[in-house]
Image 1: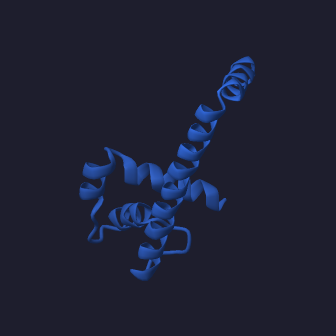
Image 2 (image 1 turned 90 degrees about the vertical axis):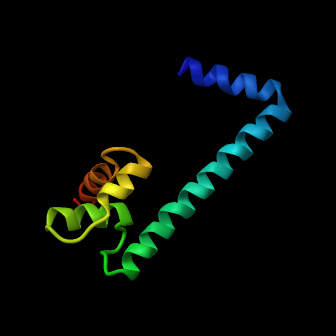
Length: 94
């Protein structure tokens, strides 16, 4: 809590810095959400379930021994990305 107060105070002392920081975070969040939403749309268009990203769909297909792109997605986004996405998706369903 103390660190948060210090961060807020330091941003308040530097108005230009605070505007830049908040706008950069908003910009980053915006593009993250656009990417996730696009991934969900692409997945649904290919026959996936609602709120299931392309990564999650591919991990589900791997579990069902179907053709999948897990190896490619994990190569680009990091080892275990698809599995972690699938776990997050499954836990949100319950």
